[in-house]
Image (cartoon, rainbow, N blue to C red):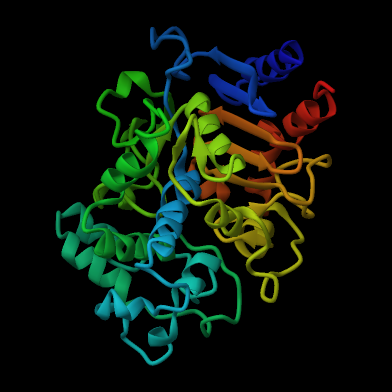
Length: 377
């Protein structure tokens, strides 16, 4: 299988879709593929180094399922947070209308809070000037697009606000909490917010304001807001992602260290959580924005999912906009981590055509089909 995966990835590097990649496959608790291929930088001839097992990739939205969601459920299992708690119970400034006062933790985790996808007007300018209080105020005061609980609509803005809610309860930032509760106990040595060395990271191009995206977040607003957010922020490796995912498949425990309860993990990944509100997807973009989810996870066995034709009905997955993917399939006891530095020129992902191109060139579906179709007996 590893030979086939290597050929699959190499062909995409040769076509110029991305310059470097890692692929990790864990099956029945054993690593059966751990590949690192290509270069850390797109620039021809630049001595940027080859991708190795410790090269870090920008996971972007996978942060939601490796940091924000497990922290929320850790707080739930500790009796410090409830799904029916209201956001205003923890962030009073959020309650700028009667409708917003109704938004619950369950809504935030299901993307049914009615919070817009679009960044609050003026927030980026405030953050650029260093006025983070103003940037957060604009996040909290932004109006809703629909009534809470009425529609599924993906929103990084919602996840940023929810991350702040969690920090209020935790009494520390998300990065410190995730490191203490998950990353260090699981031995995830190459997973972090704000990498100390950009040289350990792959390059994903330039931001709209011209920043070199190597060890930094794609979106300028999130960069200026500090890069430790509930929406995006962590950098990691395929090996570390397999450790985290094995913990989930083992019911919250890995190598004798328990970080979450068995029932807690089952609630986190065990079933579609937006069953009464999701829309039947008609495109890749629609699937991301309003399709079936298990909280922040995308439901893998769904039309227009990124995860192929052979996944089980228990599969969940998550995509990062810089070209990174994670699949966890409990029925097969399988994990697939597929990391690239495809990059995310944000304007090209504004419509269906951009998402179709993104999916076609990276082709997580094809990789998942290749892996599952060739699993050892």
